Image (tube, rainbow, N blue to C red):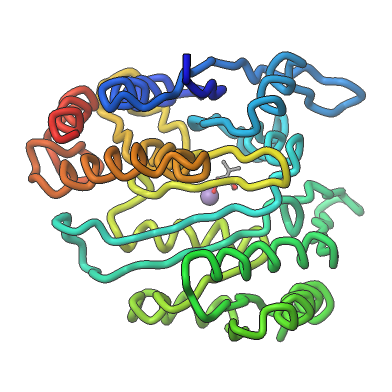
Length: 335
Ligand code: IPM
Ligand code: MN
């Protein structure tokens, strides 16, 4: 039927509502996507989370998926399913663009950053143990293999979007071996890209300069270890109006999964209050990745116009008055 089938993980909390908004808008835009909902309820095999075989097969077969937020337990309980997904499909580079929305004003304007986060190791390796009561060792795992492949991804990405500089963000002044390896991996990869300059910055300094003048970072693609990227990407979202606005792509070799940066927001779930923008813009990234730029442009333009159209059409997280459904129909009216 000329359509592309895409698995969708609707997610927890506000996930089903914002997924419904995406589906409705895609339908109205005649985007050639047929969604197939997949279940990510894991079973535990030898102490490790395993997704249902049908889900894994479908995602492998289709190579892309869209994912809503999955709740993450804090301090105890199972490993975050978000992380298990990244691990299961070896999604090694997390691409997080962040751009000011024209017509939606915050204290900052002219934000236009791209952050690429190592997505498989670092502090997220999940290796932690108690050495004695009151003493815990949490391992930050850094390998040349993962560092080089994410840096190579960043250089290729810079080439693709026409940026001339890659900024490696690190703290090798303190973590001399671990972050040192990340930096030397960037240097090794940089040799293959003579047209792109490799620049360096310490993560604390990047935070300082980012809140002083985010426009400085427009010239770069930033690349950094996992936890720094997690924190820095929230910081960047905060500059433009919050997590309700920022998309991301978890990129692997064969499979890529596009997801919003925000969580499942259980406090507002089911209340017709959630902002679907982040998931929408993630699905726009997905359409571009699938080589369907006409639909990506059309949907993105309608979303951005709606965000610029005033308080009555935007959701409460953006200090607006619109419900999820109202926002959705405003987007559809602008397609
Ligand atoms: C993100 C999220 C996740 C992360 C959580 C939910 C495990 O904060 O995608 O940024 O820390 O990576
Ligand atoms: Mn995060």
